[in-house]
Amino acid sequence: MSAAQSILIVGETSAKLSDIAKGILKVQELPPAIEIEKDTFSYPWEVDTKYYTASVNLCCTDVKSLANKSFADTVQAIIIHFDSSDENAMTNVDEWLSFLKEYEADVKILLCDQCQSEPNVGISKLTAQEWCIGKGFELVELSPVLDEDEDEDGDFAESTGVTRIIQALHAHVWPEMTMKSESSWNASRHQTLTQNDSVPSNLAADLESLNIDTPFAPNGPEIEDKIEELFSEGSQELEFSELFSELQSMKERVANLPSEERKACAEKVVMAFWKAIGGDDDEINCKSVFHCFHLLY
Image (cartoon, rainbow, N blue to C red; front, side, top):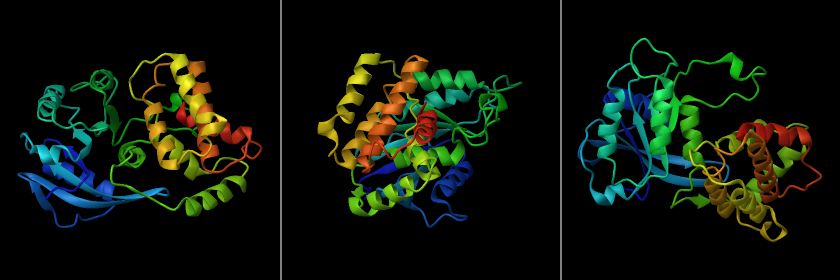
């Protein structure tokens, strides 16, 4: 019997899929698998974040086949692994996609070991990125080539690999998730934030996990109105789960705004998040805001 919520990892080799599953579960050896569908093997994952818990099935298959609709309805996230050194990689990915039409997943990741800008053979990073933009996926590399010019300070590097996958999955609003007591996470979070001059790494990671990079092109005023709605006096009592869901929606709207508008929106998102966890306007300093919205930006 299928679980209420699942993640589906697909690709050409079962060994690679197993390695990805180990990374997500943070284990050296996978637990016994359950064949949840024909040729689809599942491992239990107890998602446990600061704010919620959720029981999820982490499913893997290397067989292109149509899934049972009851299982397809449980899939909240899809991860397609491909070999970027293969000239036919994107054709193979498109073939996978044709079997995944029934899955209305919110989290969609295209995963490879490494995508070079100008490869001697295989698929370029630009080609993969263009495919992702067209299909609504996020490109994640397990071992990307780091470009020192992208971040001279080295303090705001984007998360990559399995870390980025886990962040995206943690940021998802799972249908059957159980919110933790507000008093427990709110008190500890507020204390941590107010005791440090700069933003702590755990809040930075939480905000970074929102990763505003989904390829949509809205207009600026629409986004500003939505942020103002979250940021208004009347919304300060908004439940965390509701705000979390709204922030998920926000990430789909900001990606293609002009640079300065993106910065302004990101700063307001940080402030809305800060208020949601009980912070006062006077307590969050400029350095903290800059660090957070740089990650979001």
